[in-house]
Structure formats: structure tokens, C-alpha cells
Amino acid sequence: PTPAPSQAKSVAVESEDEVPEIDEATVTKLSPEQREQYAAKLKQAGNRAYGDKAYNKAIGLYSQAILCKPDPVFYSNRAACYSAMSEWDKVVEDTTAAIAMDPEYIKAINRRATAYEHQKKYSDALLDFTASCIIDNFKSESAAQAVERLLKVFAEHRAKEMMASRPPKLPSPIFVGNYLQSFRQKGRPAGLEDSVELDAETGKGQLQIGLQGLEKKTGEGYEEARQAFEKALELGDLGEYEALAYNLRGTMRTLLGNHAEATEDFDKSIELDPGMIQSYIKRASISLELGEPDKADAEFAKALEQDKDDPDVYYHRAQASFIKGDLAEAQKDYQKSIDLDKDFIFSHIQLGVTQYKMGSIASSMATFRRCIKNFPKVPDVYNYYGELLLDQSNFSEAVEKFDTAMEMEKQTKPMSMNVLPLINKALALFQWKQDFKEAEQLCQKALIIDPECDIAVATMAQLLLQQNKVTEAL
View 1 (cartoon, rainbow, N blue to C red):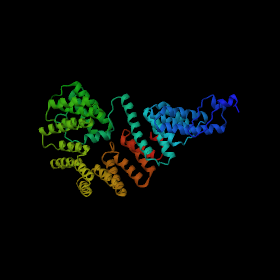
View 2 (spheres, rainbow, N blue to C red):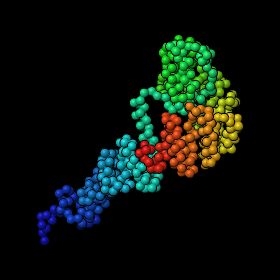
View 3 (cartoon, rainbow, N blue to C red):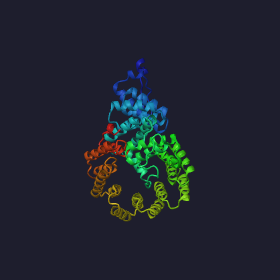
View 4 (cartoon, one colour):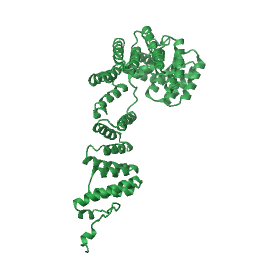
């Protein structure tokens, strides 16, 4: 019999390969059973088109399936097509629709997270990937790695925004102190001692104030020093101290990250006094920071031409070799630095660390035991030794060493305490006993002592993330 007009317009599917044609008008004439049947066929056809990389065709088929039956899988599949075509706004739109229907649809959540990452919406991407990990009980290695990666990217992105908008500011006093103490300390030049009265409105007076600021070893002291060195060179008339003034201003500019201006200062320092060895070394450190190791090597060579027996050159060249992964050269230079000056503790510590990295565990442990014997009152020895013990999962002894370092820091530097032993103890307790509470308390204490300590902030974020406290971690 001849079908009625309305029936003629309805969609019929006779075979497996035949795909219905659906639009907003025809779909209203279908029964619920027909919609279910056609949606399934359209989805299958969409999957085949997607497999053939015919993405626009697949999008059309999934769209028709959605008309028949709005389903989170259809939206997510269409989002996959848009993802393959890098149409990230549409990926977000479709995955959001899928997640609204099924809030625990992991595939859609991950797909949206990827789209957010491409849109540079790092916070949104991180939240989605973290939600995915939590829903999946952290079974997906790729999602967990994405969380770690995005936390780093997000932090770097925010840091750039903050750096661009904030006035010049020195890093954490611990960072500044560690940089300064990586050079052997020299006494004040004659004429700049505290016993000499200098007018604060002169270049020499400001240079004296700057040196006093450095000796305080506090955040306020370092900032006083930075400003004083700037003013000293503005006022001028520094005479024999001019090369030193340029070296010191360059040092502060290096710490601020103003590499070009710092390099100009070191150039001027060397021009005035070619024997200013630290200026060559500091130029080398800038070259390393900028990813120019060959330039750094050239600077070390120039320094050794001036003084082949300066232990600082060998120590910092060893540091450069260590960073580059050339541990054999690093070990040789650390030993040379020790041979030239056995009283500089950091050459011994770094030698022990290098031996450990080379796999010479027994030699490394012996080096640290000698350090404890020869430098029993230096907290850095116990802190570094504790780090190596922690790496060997010797938790009890590592915590004991961190406690010793903390106590020494309190006694010797109450106003400028190095908080690294606190952070290392926090990591040890977390790894050893999963003791989040005490680990967090130690990090909070570190941040009270040194609010600018980036390692404390990063460790705190990591601890919070491990407990799924994503917002606090961010």
C-alpha cells in the first residue's frame, strides 16, 4: 500500500550500512524507540568516519545522533573531532555539555582539560586533570603526570605575571645568603671598616653602609645593601673602591635577574681592576643562567689567567660541571678547590654530593663523616648529609640530621635562619610516615621565618596536592 504523506517523510533504515538522515524537523516525527535506534546507528557511523579521519563528516553524524538522543558520549565524541581539528572552544563547549550530564565522565573531563591547556587556561586545566585523578583513584599515570606538569606550568605562568607587575625585589634571604656564601668571605677593604667614620652622603659612605647591610644576613639588610650600592655609584668619587662597587652592584642586579645590567657592571669592574676574580666568576654564572655554557667556560679560563691558584674559580667551575652533568670534572675541581683552601666547607659538601651522584656511596658517606668531624658546628653539613640519607630511605637518621641542623641554625643565626632543614624534615616525615599534619606544620613554620622561600611554597603545594586540596595547592 502507498504510505501516508507523513510516513513517506519518516526515516527508514533497512540495513546495517544504511545511515538515517535526521534534522530538527524529521526527528520530531520519530518514536522514542526509533530515536534510540537511529542514535546508535549514527554514533556507529560517526565512529567509522572518525577512524577514517573524516572529522567534518563525523561531526555531522554525531550532531544528528545528539538530535535523536542527547547523550554525554555523543558530545564527547564530537569534542574528539573538534580536538583533532584544534577547535578548542568547541571542544570545551561539547565536553562541558557531556560533563553536565555525567559529572564523573573521565574521558570528557580529560578532553576538556587538554583543551583548556591549549587555550593557556592552566588553572582550569589543572582543576580538571586533578578531578579526573580523584574520580579514577589516581589509577591513570598520564593524568597524574598532567597534574604535575600543569602545576609547574601554572606556577611559572603566574610567576611571570607577578614579576612583570612588581617592583624590583630581591629573592628570599636564604637564596641571597647561599649565593653570597658560595664565594669565600673576604674582610672589608682598608678604609671601609666600621671604625672609619664616613659621610653617608658620599660614595664611600654608601659603600660602607652596603657592606654593613650584607653582614646583617637578613632580608632587610640585603635590600639596604642593594640600595646603598646603587647610590654609591650615583654619588661617585669612589677612588680605589670603584671596581668593588661595580662588582657589588652587579651582584645585586644578578640576584634581581637583571642580567644585562649586571654584566655591564662586571665588565666595568674588570676594566677598572682585571684582578677582580669574582667578577669573571659572576659573569660565568650569568652565562650559565642564560644557557651559554661555552661562554661560562671562557670566563673561568680568563679568571685562571689572572690567578691560577684562586680556589673560588675551581669551586664555581665545578658547580658548572655538576650542572652540565660532567661529574668527573666537577669532582676534580672540587678537590682542587679543597687543596687550595681546606677551610671552605662548601667544597667538601659538594664533593660528597658529587661522589654520591657518581655512585660512590661509600666515598660520599666517608666525606660527610669527615665533614662532621672537621666542621662540627656547621649546620649545612648535617642538612646535606640528611638529604643523602633520605635518598637512601634511611628516614630515622635523616630526620636526626635535619633536627641537628635546625638546632644549630637557631643557635647561630636566630635572625636569619636557613629553613631548608625544616623543609627537608617535612619531606622525610611525609615519605616515611605519610605524616601530613607535622609536614605541613614544618612548612608553615618555614614560611613564617622566610615568606619568600620558593622551596617551602613548592613543598607545601605538593603536600596539599597529595591530599587532594587542589584549591589550597594552587
